[in-house]
Image 1: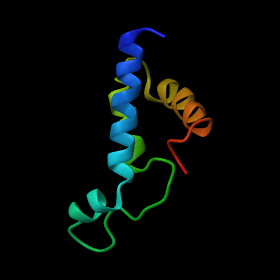
Image 2: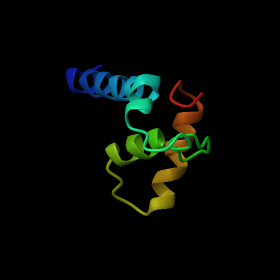
Image 3: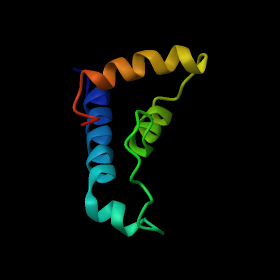
Image 4: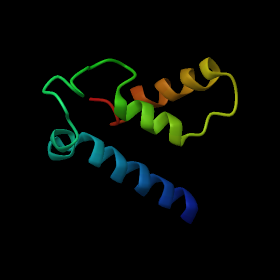
Length: 76
């Protein structure tokens, strides 16, 4: 694995941990119901998808993105 890939994985992991952190979520809620939706396109998944910098049609990017998520620890 190349160093840039390792760096990217560390960044994504730290961001994932931050977005999953109950303290972080609580600190950024304006109302109790904010950030409670448990759908496929959660706030965390949206941030991670945007970091992927889609360059083709949205659906063309979303299909492999969700396939990768389903095989990883990003969405639990």
